[in-house]
Image (tube, rainbow, N blue to C red):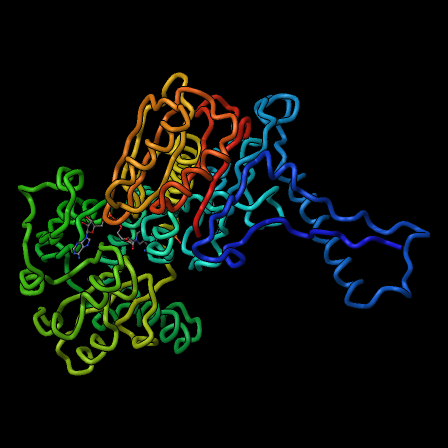
Length: 518
Ligand SMILES: NC(=O)c1ccc[n+]([C@@H]2O[C@H](COP(=O)([O-])OP(=O)(O)OC[C@H]3O[C@@H](n4cnc5c(N)ncnc54)[C@H](O)[C@@H]3O)[C@@H](O)[C@H]2O)c1
Ligand SMILES: O=C(O)[C@H](O)COP(=O)(O)O
């Protein structure tokens, strides 16, 4: 009789991990040891049908199917250029691989940056050799319980991270990254397109030609030509030159829109009370007006373009009944940031009362504006160009590899920036912990007590979270033991990894062990 597979799935999930518990969540070497194989398919003479319940048979068949799918996906993921990359097509690397789970369609330009063999990347858990260490996604609305306890970082191929439960990830010691600027040009071009569509009766005119003129004139060219001339008076627009555009948020996208609008001969008013130095340096300060209050925007702008992140308590309904009451009557709103930044119900009332007559251009729908002629809404296309998708995916892949292999944190939205140059003979531990007093002392005292000399270290913080990277001068033969001891010695530690010797291409030997409290 066929044996049932003993352990179908050794992969831990966050759902199965109780909060507060100290967990060893993975190590390549341990994973290799604990991996189990499903029982082979039944062969003739070993299948005792009568002794199996239907449920057991279904379970067995599902197990075999899952294994077959996993084998097939691993085959498909294997590099075709095996000769160029070494005998096993893995750049000569033969250790356990880093595992990256993807959501959404991510450009192959990014996915191909992960060295085959050293990295396993798939959208399906079953196609990964082990539970994911990193998540790579676009607009997928990520749920806390989709983040397995083994995940050590999340990267958004794009700008907005409001689809990720960032504060929960911070509490779990997981950095969330994005790719600043990688898709900014694509969004700028769509905003320009929207400006033209807002100023002229292009969308309405095309619809009229297709749905009215062509239908009423029944395909008669002469009649259609006459109507196209006669009906143009219905769609008179205005020019952008000389009009005033307010730009709210002067970061990567807003800054590019500033330049493009100036080139069109528009006057530009910019508002960004939390502008960083890099973005400020990109702005043509002498050719635009920067204002310190939103009221100065509403008072003088014909167009307003939103380029701020969606932050529930701060940018939610930034455009609302109050601001619309202060705006010029002809105000057109361009929202290629996030739908929730505009209060659709307030805008509908303003349209209905005639207080506002301008259009609302967006690549986000609004529950109160469905079917409204003045709401010209397109699919969420801002970053949907080949170039933007490639740039974002490539930058995201580099960010993940940098973090997993060196512990460096660059472009995180919830963790401090951290780059510690790699020491020649260092053995690196990275620790995410609460930003509380005495933590560094507890960590170094513990390591000193174990006779480890710290050759260099960097401790950085951001709000309630802190991150410490330490290089030890000798190889901790049992990294699991050290981490478990550190956890016991220091309550503030949230998650930790032993990275081995970064850059020596020996990940997994001695192996990256990682611990987490979540
Ligand atoms: N439609 C799309 O496909 C698409 C594509 C990319 C980005 N986006 C959206 O656009 C947003 C901006 O993207 P970006 O690349 O320019 O990001 P960015 O971080 O470079 O710029 C955002 C700017 O907003 C400013 N800001 C923050 N809070 C503000 C506030 N309350 N008032 C005024 N300014 C404020 C910041 O100081 C920063 O300069 C993203 O967060 C995302 O939601 C949409
Ligand atoms: O925030 C972003 O970068 C955009 O909204 C792009 O989203 P997408 O990656 O789903 O196109």
